[in-house]
Length: 75
Image (cartoon, rainbow, N blue to C red; front, top):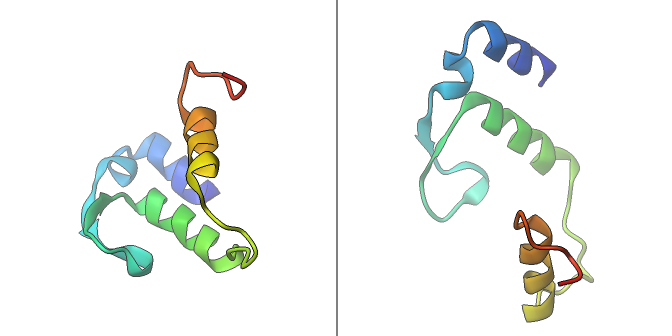
């Protein structure tokens, strides 16, 4: 990843170029950059889902609040 970041500084095309892909069993095709594919590959290689974790409406709402700029997690 460090190499991709360093290369993107001197060669912006590395981060700007996008290719259509359906990585990791995605249902739909999307535009992916080389750095995005590399980071996602690392995540999928070293992380695994917790089988005891269940998604429900309140967990999804909490995640949306946490990831939405300008909205505090306690709001």
